[in-house]
Image 1: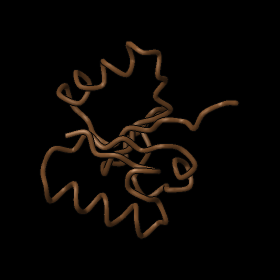
Image 2 (image 1 turned 180 degrees about the vertical axis):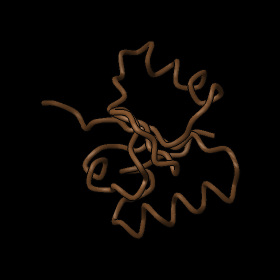
Image 3 (image 1 turned 90 degrees about the vertical axis):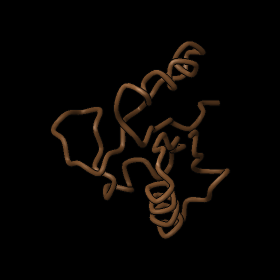
Image 4 (image 1 turned 60 degrees about the vertical axis):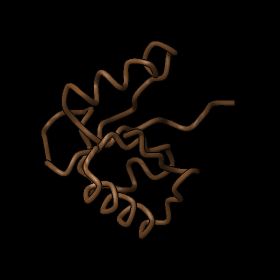
Length: 89
């Protein structure tokens, strides 16, 4: 069957370099989650949880405070670390 859609939380060149190994394996990124509300189809404001809740969220935010805030936010919205979201840095 069809797997869950993959969403990435993070931005910048470091994230895109780190993402290369997934893209090389043919993983399609359904969208990029950000705290900044940008215009553009691939960008999703983090508060629009319903957009990415059924998918898998890959976190590429390096700073510890940001990571724990993301974890707390996602867990509050019933996503489970290690099942629904993963931190990569």
